[in-house]
Length: 325
Image (cartoon, rainbow, N blue to C red; front, side, top):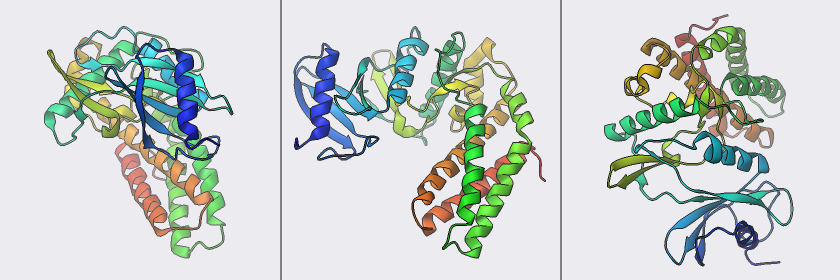
C-alpha cells in the first residue's frame, strides 16, 4: 500500500484533468488522514503548490458535492461583473481510480481572513451577497440543483423529529436529558405547525443562489489595485431558494441598499428572513448533533449543545410569531 494513498489518488486525478499550472512543487495536507486506508466517505483536503507559483485546493468529496460546485462556478457565478467579487478558478473534478469519491480542484484564494468584528469586512460581505444574489436571480438553477431554503429545512425537521423519538428511548439517558429531548421535539413540532407562514415569507423574495455556509472560515479579503474584494469558496452546501441562511451575519441595511432597485421587500421583511435563517441553522445543528448521538452514548457536551439549540429555536420561533401551542 502507498505511504500516502490520498496523495497518489490526488495526483492521478490532477494529471487526468490536464490543467495548465505547470509542475507540482509539493502537496500539503490541510484536513483529514492522508496515509493508509480510509472509508469511502473520508474527507481529505490538500493544498497543491506549483513550481511557477500559486496553488490549488484539492478536496475529496462525493460526486454530488463536486457537481454542485461545478454548477456554481460554471453556471451560476459565470458572468458576474463586479470588482467586489473575487471568484476562484475552478479547475474541475475527477473520480478516483477506486471507489465512488471524487477529487475537486479550485484555485487557492490569496488574502487575509475575514474579521466579523471589522465593520468594513461586514459591509463588503453584505455588498458581495447583494451582488451575487441579484446576479444569480436572473438565471435558472441547473437541473438537479438542490434546494437551499425551506424544503431542505423541512426535510431535516422530519429527520430530527424521528431521531428525537428514537433517542428518548435509548438506554442510558437521564430524566433531565429526556426532558430536553421532549422539549426540543415540542419546539420542532410547533415550527412544523407554522410552516405555511414560513413558505409565505420565502415567497416574498426572488429565489437565487444560496451559499448555505456563509461563515468566516469560507471567506477571504482579497486586495488588488482596485481595492478590496471578497473571495468565497466551499460551495458544497449551496442550493437554490430565498437566501435566509446567508443573511445571518450580514448588516441588513447595507445589503438592502446594495440591492437597490432589485430589492423586493422592506427592511422588516428582510429581518424576518434573517430570523428564518437563524432557525434553519439551529435545525441543521440539531440534525448533525443527533447524527453524532446515534452512534455514541450521551456526552454532556452534545446534550448541552442540544439544550442551546432548543433555546435558539424557541427564541426565533417567537420572533417569527409561529404557533405557541
